Structures are given as structure tokens and as C-alpha cells.
Image (cartoon, rainbow, N blue to C red; front, side, top):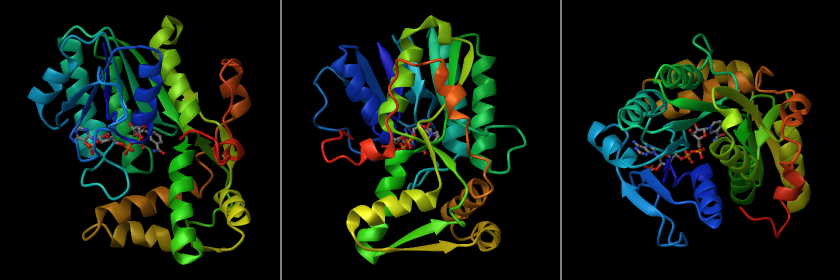
Amino acid sequence: MILVVGGTGLLGRRLVRDLAAEHVRVRVLARGVHPFPSEWPDDVERTAGDLRSTADCEKAVAGCSQVVFAASGFGLGKDGDPRSIDRDGAIRLTRAAAAAGVEHLVMMSMHGAAADAPIDLLRCKYAAEEALKASGMAWTIVRMGVLLEQWVGLLSESLSTKGTVMLFGSGTQPITFTSLADASAIVRRALADPALRGRTVEWGSQNLTPRELAGELIARAGRGTVRSIPSPVLHVLAFAARPFSPFLSRMAAAGTWMDSGALQLDLASVRAEFPDIPVRTLQETLQPAADA
Ligand SMILES: NC(=O)c1ccc[n+]([C@@H]2O[C@H](COP(=O)([O-])OP(=O)(O)OC[C@H]3O[C@@H](n4cnc5c(N)ncnc54)[C@H](OP(=O)(O)O)[C@@H]3O)[C@@H](O)[C@H]2O)c1
């Protein structure tokens, strides 16, 4: 049995679908704020529980051989936060898994995770990584670039409702995007291949500037403009918004960081080890027949 923590999220839904198609027994832990998809096969176990509860974590890991941590409190419009979910929730879950005899845990992390990283999410991810390494279980850490489909969705929504793509920062620095197909593929490889245990794998699909991404969406829509909030304004916003909107503050800080060029991987070397995993690019993702 494989537990996918956060299996109702953007990546989690894709991963659960792919694992189920491979006839892997899957259990999902999530609160149910994101509904459990009705199209999942009946034998996918749905466990409603909260990472902030030790009892819920213990119940979820019982009987599992492997765990994927794909939950997050950073996401858009949610009520969580990185400290309680990406750090403390991940550590609570890791301890419960180790105590229950789980063999291997795959931790979804992000490029740039470090103790002294300039944004809170990356410090939280680093703390979770360190706790996992010290847990006594076999481990794999996957540090991804941002999810491509999430950005496509956000920018497309802004384009269709306002006729404008709004960028946080100049949008001129390349950042590493990871398509859902590629993210799911590397996690499934980590679950299946013991050679990836004890490894931190950096991962991504394509380096693009946000302006290139916006340009592609505008070209396909046949209309629209790009507007941007300059980095110095974002920098101020990250501090000013903190008391009344921690979410906006987090987004502004992340925008400043990405606009610095820090989220760009050398994809040729990252992908060289996995030549059999095809790269899913923006163009392929936008094909009408592409699966989400
Ligand atoms: N999105 C990115 O660009 C990106 C980049 C690098 C790394 N990552 C990492 O990749 C993983 C997947 O990201 P994602 O964007 O697919 O995540 P997401 O869409 O934000 O989904 C988050 C998941 O976590 C669950 N969750 C949130 N709070 C919870 C709680 N208190 N207890 C139990 N479950 C909870 C959510 O379900 P409920 O709300 O129903 O509980 C949902 O299933 C995450 O670990 C993320 O940090 C993401």
C-alpha cells in the first residue's frame, strides 16, 4: 500500500490516477477541502484527516510500505500555511511513518530549499527534508520547479476574465516549470527504483520566462496584454501585506525570488539521468488532447 499525502492536490490527483492505472494499491490522506475525485477507482482508499493531528497521521500510515508527501499549505486561496503543513505537518507525518515501520518516503520539495533560503516555504521544505533524512527510513527528495499546469491555469483565468495576464515581477527571468506528467513520472520512478533511495533529485521540464509563457497563452487566445508588478513593489508588498494577508505576502515574496533568476535549473544535466522519461513541454501541455 502506498500512501499519497495530499493526493487531492494538483500533483496528487495526477499521481493517484497514474498509480491506480498501474494497479498499485493507493491510500490518500487529505482533509477533503479539495473533494476526493469521483473518477478514482473504488479501491483507492480515501482517508479524511489533517496533518496537524498526530492521530490522523498515525491512522493514515498504518500498513503502508511507502509514502509520498505531496501536501502543501502554500497553495493559492487555501487556509493553511507552509509552517503548519510543509514543515510541521511533514515532520509529524514522517515521524508517524517511521514509527509505523514504513520503508520509504518520497518528499516533494522545491528547488532552492535551504536553511537560509530567502522565502519561508523553502526554509520549511528544508526542515522537512532534514527530518526525513534523520528518520531512519529510506528516503527520496524530489526538488521540483513550479508546476506548469498551475501557472497555465492561473494566467489563463486572468486572461479570460480580465483580458490581461498579471505577472508578479518583471517576468523576464527564466524559471523551471515542471509538467504534471513529468512530476508524476519521477515520483513513480522513485517509488519503484531503489537506486533513487538516499538521493535528492532536482527535477523540471522546461525553462521559460513568465513573459514567454504569457505570450504563448495570448497568442493562442488571439487577444490579451501583459501587466506586471515590478519586483521593488513586490518586495514592499511582501512586508506590508503580512499582517492582513499572509497569503498575498507569501506570493509577493515568492514572486521577488523567482524574478531574481534563482529558480532556474540546468535541465540538460537534470534530465540526462532519466532519458526514458519523455519531457512534457508547454506546447504539448496546451494541445487540446493533452491529459491534465
Ligand atoms: N505547485 C508547485 O508549483 C510546487 C513546486 C514545487 C514543489 N511543490 C510541492 O509538490 C507537492 C504538490 O504540490 P501541489 O501544488 O500539487 O499541491 P496542492 O495542489 O496545493 O495540494 C495540496 C494538498 O495538500 C492537502 N492538504 C492541505 N492541507 C492539509 C492538511 N492540513 N492535512 C492534510 N492534507 C492537507 C490538500 O487537500 P485538502 O485541502 O483537502 O486537505 C491537497 O490535497 C507539495 O508538497 C508542494 O509543496 C509544488
